Image (cartoon, rainbow over all chains, first blue to last red; front, side):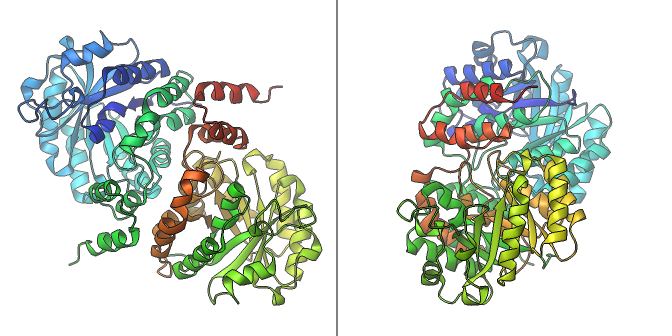
Length: 317
Length: 317
């Protein structure tokens, strides 16, 4: 029996863009969007919305900004069943960057935040909600957040917002199944019935898909994935695995397999996401993959030295 | 708190050998063995024992046979804490292929079997036990076995053998966490306190490590892994992830990181294990990776056609 409340969101262009500064060509973006529609996805996230006052379009491709005209060039007036999502980071976007939802092809705005900035995230979320968008809040790097801060943030989101979902985001690919279980249960227990729990996992320890399943078992209903797991470092939960696992007959994994072959796998040689020991080492130690990415890009193979360096860096009293 | 009953077995040479017909050079085998000893592993499995009447040493490297002299050339008289394991398949070995354990550097013989051949496996296991070896039985392709047959086999193993462990072997990388949970609980419930449950997972759906954790949670204590996940198709549970997860201070992952860099990762270009869509597709459909391996070796990327072919092959009434 499938759970009709489950919504699947493809974050290929948004999350994959962290590796190429969102310089995807239109053919790729269109192909990912159309495959998502054909696969029966609920949302396709086409990038970040960021302020062009803060970031230069010379330095970043169009999917860093998701200007309305760029989005419409890809999706036209949209699709009857698959909605367009965009993400924004607290502090990197201004109020004037959002049209009223009725004038936009965007259906959902997701606000990414660290737990410490939850008040700013709530304000931005409420702005977007009042403009008519569906909203979510995605609390990043949750594996590094203090339990007290998480509790406060979840309480606030419940009391002060009308988000569709609050996400557990394992930015560092550090969490094991029992920790996913704990966090999803916590969110689920503290949120009312009008709000869903979302899950966004990274694959540094090869647990992206497994942890997404664990979240599903504990009633997370908003699920993020990317085509062939594309994403920074080891990447994300692979969409083709997730769709193959889900039982809802509305999903068809085959258009995703096509776009893997046509667009995504050919990018592996240059973008190099996937399982690499430097990401495994940052994941095990609950750290940002930054240092691992530097190690991969300089093609170092002294993993023992990197392990020792990361271990030595751990905070002591 | 760690669980001292947990035993870790490295199957790099034995399982990796399925890809190169066990033609590893001595330096590689010695390096894997010594890294295993330095890492504090309980067992290192150096290959299969097979009859040279049934398989020709012209066609297969030495680790297909694990002759006593070949083993001693690598391990000398062995190591005080890390034991040598070998595996044999029912029907591919003869009684005369085993010395008394007192004359061998081998400590443990693992018997691999399909559930239907459990009687033969029990006979071979008991032969080895009577010769003085530690033994296990590894029921392969458990995802395709009927519940009735599994129940009968586990009952027989409990009543008729003195194995150290009975393994759940997900040969096709097809099982999800709830199925691992079910099988490990079943074995654990039916076996007496002198027998442990073992787990051997494949990575076709990126669940090798996650399913091993799930088995640990449900009290499996014999854990298989391979260095950098080397193994047929998508490979196995990666040893470096498993050791990083386990809390027992006797384990040191760093020698395994060294052997990854020095010996195992350099083989990836030719042996090509890891996450590939053809293995994901066979895993999702609970099939042997054979057809996927053929697809990978001919470098086909028509994943949709392969999906449709595999789906069409499913048995109908």
